[in-house]
Structure formats: structure tokens, C-alpha cells
Length: 167
Image 1 (cartoon, rainbow, N blue to C red):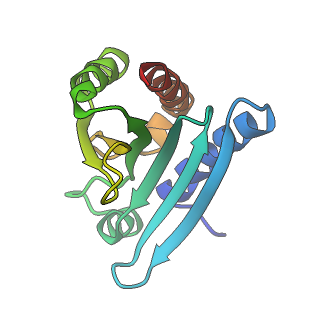
Image 2 (cartoon, rainbow, N blue to C red; image 1 turned 45 degrees about the horizontal axis):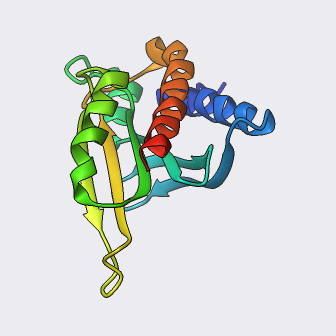
């Protein structure tokens, strides 16, 4: 019988959590990708959603070949699991708001995620600055953290709402 991998188990729970919230009208899923990279033999599941029109949220779940191999071969020196990354994209009035955004994210998420912000604008349209805010946890997750996915989605939605209030 086929035994699902850690990635598949986490993905199914994450997907269910997000689509339940979409069906309830809490969020609107705007994009979804379920990718297998044949060059690196990795898998990535990406879901983008909005709760409001000001902030777009993305949850990215990734599993590498090394993790898959460690799981299938039951290697003791490699901890199998998946990486979870979050991102938010929003228009900002000026770059001075980045410190507020950073402090807001730290208030919600604590010191765990590494936070980066990338500002960009189209040439001759400098009045519209886009800010892509990325949260990286720099650790593997597995089935032991499946119950945390509900909280992660809650925090993601809360973060998007509070970011929208800053604009």
C-alpha cells in the first residue's frame, strides 16, 4: 500500500484549512500551484489568497529531494520534513513604513520568523511602491506540527488584516 510522505500529509491539511476558509467566505483564494521540479526533484505547493483587496498573502510549502530521501531511506543523520514560508504583498505610501511593518510582524509572530522586505516600483510610477514581506522560519516541519497549521493560517490572516490597516 502507498504510504504518503510528510509533504503530502502536511499539504493535505494545509489545503483543507485554506479551502474551508475560502468556502466560509473568510478569505478568497486567488491562485494555487502544485509543482514538481524535475531538475531538483523537489515539490512545492503555493497558495495565494486575500482577505481584503489591500494585501495579498501567500503560503509556500516546499520539500526537497534530501528530505524525501531521508524519509524514504530512513536516514538517521537527516531530519525529514518541509519548509514553510509566508509572504505578503501590499502597496505602501513610502519606505518609512517598513519599520512599522517589521514591528507589527514581530508583535504577532514573535522572534521566530526571519523577516525581509523588498520594495519595488515601476519606472515612472514611483508613487506606487510595492512591498513584498517574507517570513522564513528556517526549520523543518513534519506531521508533529500539523496541529499548528490552523494557528499559522490564523496568524497569516491576522497579519494581512493589520497590514491593511497600516495603508
